[in-house]
Amino acid sequence: MEGIARIGPAVGHAVVGWVACAGVMGVGRAVTTMERTLLIHAAAVPVVFGALAWSYFQRVGHLGAVRTAALFTGTVIALDAGLVAPVFEHSFAMFRSVRGTWLPFGLIFLVTWIAGRRIGARPGP
Image (cartoon, rainbow, N blue to C red; front, side, top):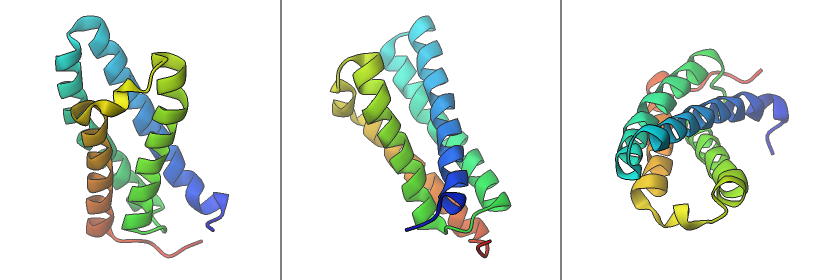
């Protein structure tokens, strides 16, 4: 099991991405239709998480591409399942949406993995 010092930076980067995407969803819901909001969210996810993954791998990146992609994605899934669905949405219906939930999860994993492969893992502390 990885120590907090090793996984903390990856989880922190993932939380920042989750907050950014929550902002996209919040603003989108206020100014346009849910359909458009989901499209904007799906387009924003690879940009946001690609930039965060690039930053993570440039600065820390010692977990490697697959483990970091799994941590980024798992963190977002945990926050959506543990906070968004039960507290804000009062429903787990969001998990029925491929475009609104599963596509973004897949894109988070994919762009994080690609960034990790392109930059490469750094030696551990």
